[in-house]
Length: 168
Length: 220
Ligand code: HEM
Ligand code: HEM
Image (cartoon, rainbow over all chains, first blue to last red; front, side, top):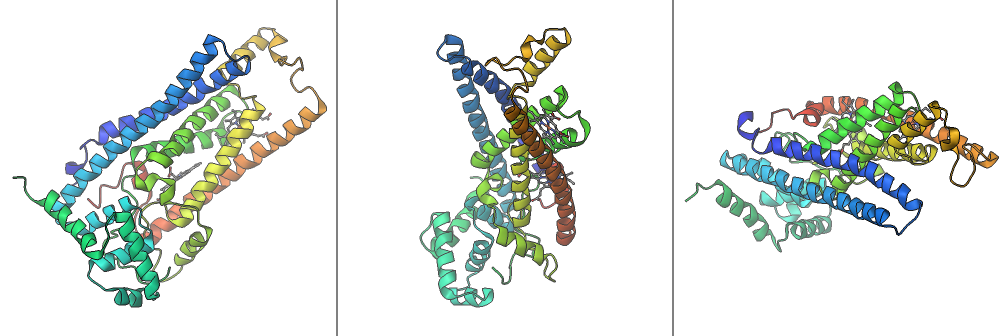
């Protein structure tokens, strides 16, 4: 099982992560030197170029982090496609909920909603007021970028068809 | 927040990432190694101590950037500091159902993470004050110069020699005190942290350390 998902872009991601950390360390040293020089007099070419390089270093950290995040989300997409192909739908839903940043309570409610329970049933199961559940559903839809329950469920059906279906 | 959790017991559908992303893993072990080395092994204030401290600064900075731009579960928003949730999480350890799963650090772990980072920031800040924010390179150069008999490097730019006025001495003493207390607090918290990982691993019947190392290889 593991061989199929190991590899799959994990090694480059690890290398890039190590690189970001080294960048952070290098930036700490360089920026402190630059700050010392600046405190001795501002305006000469050297201190200006150090200031410039410091900014570039910091921008580099953000850019490399952003790139790393994209690599990681590609790895996740591949894993998800694999999970869908294997019929591991619970995992697909869990990962998607995490990507949307649902709170634990929202995840419970979202899962009940996907299972087809209505607001009153969810409220009874959770021992909560229906108003609370309604508000939670509204927040879930907002985070998922959909406007009602049908679209919410359709999101996952689409996922199943898009990734799980054999390429044509 | 009580109530049934449909996802507990069906194979742990929500769970922290396994493995954690490489930046979280590497920065964790980098920081842990630096803290243990500086807290227990290196000569306090020695060149090596300051070198390691600076490495920790860089790693922490990268991790904090990651907390803003990283994947969902590594972002601060995935584990907001929430003392009440932390307490109810700890209490849930003693209840029959056990703790619930969380997509990132659980609320108790989250409080610990912020406490550790805060201690580290204080330790780093006071360390920088004690060394006038000089980089370890500058410090070793100065020390080499002093060893060679050139004491002039110890004279500050404003003409005051190191440890000059009374005020300076007293506040210097205080900064040193804070550095030491925060460092020791951090080491104690780290012990509690490791104990917490062990307890939580038992309660969830799942090794939490594997995902921080290489990933357990399970669950896929
Ligand atoms: C990485 C985390 C760090 C830990 C756990 C740590 C821990 C400690 C401890 C336990 C002491 C002994 C305090 C005493 O007995 O007076 C000490 C001293 C010292 N540390 Fe750190 N430290 C860290 C980072 C730093 C950094 C980043 C710097 C400077 C940039 C620094 C500079 C110093 C100095 C100059 C002393 C000597 C204080 C003195 O006795 O005059 N430390 N540190
Ligand atoms: C001085 C030592 C240590 C410090 C300062 C420290 C600090 C931290 C921090 C800041 C995090 C959050 C990671 C992040 O999101 O970036 C964390 C998580 C974690 N640490 Fe440590 N740690 C230390 C030692 C250890 C040790 C020795 C172990 C293994 C037994 C360990 C196991 C873990 C685990 C498993 C997590 C993830 C917890 C979770 O699943 O929510 N740590 N630690």
